[in-house]
Length: 419
Image (cartoon, rainbow, N blue to C red; front, side):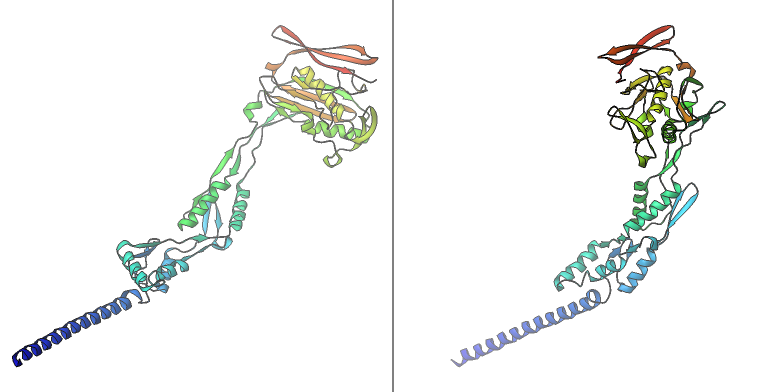
């Protein structure tokens, strides 16, 4: 009995000794772990510096304080003046011009807080992921878009140049004035280049995109105009000031027009609306069969004069209308009434070369001439037959064109007048 008791006591002592040893070992492990964790935390996690293997753009900011990181990144990516260049001329946009800024401080804060802003476990995982996989941050540029547009518009204004069409003047002879190309600043493309420079933090000189614009009428298009193809004149009372003024204004707006092959000339489009705000004065016109004063009185004498010059040149008459009353300045079947309600005088250039319209009114005479290439000259004869319709006078107008020995007669229009 005593021997058994003694054995049990020895076993109990061994058990408690082993248990104490296990406890001591576990305690030691915990102490080492805690000490190691504390060392890791203070050395790498919460050390007042940015974590491992972290980059802002191409600058490594690992183990730097926020101030150190901010200074080195700002030194690497400073905001500078941006130089735009075209044709050996430079144009500058300063950061202040567009309120340019980089979010560098925000990015540095984000890099610093990568291992600090979440739970301890999440922060440890963020540290480990960055250390072995890396972490990259990008700096973003911001600026006032309206101010940038204003600067671009100012540069464009200095570069843009409108093309100049070739033109003709006629005095003692036919003089052709040369055309000139223009310049068109490409707003969209150049703004994208500027935005890319800001986004890339690159301040290399930008070569601006500027397009060369071609004139609609080039010198070589009209240097073939060498002769007068036809002309026509009518007379008016120069002492009727308002009416004389309107005739001269309407013809002046047609004068100098170049009509290319296949193009159609519109008298109404050339003169514009016959209203006071468009420069016309009130004078006698026919409204609903009666003479009344209205803006633009007299412009029909201009259209009639031009119509007859075109008629004699052989150009294609596309639209013409007669007055409701017989005109005093031209015979029946030779007038061309126009109004803002839709009645127009139009002709189409059916020649192989362009034609030039020359018009003038002054001293009681309205004149119109058509100039073109001598190769387009044709023989023209006009015939007007008169008739009566329901007691009203009328006329039918025909034109015969002779070219290369062949003649063709066409009906131009039929006119009926109230009187």
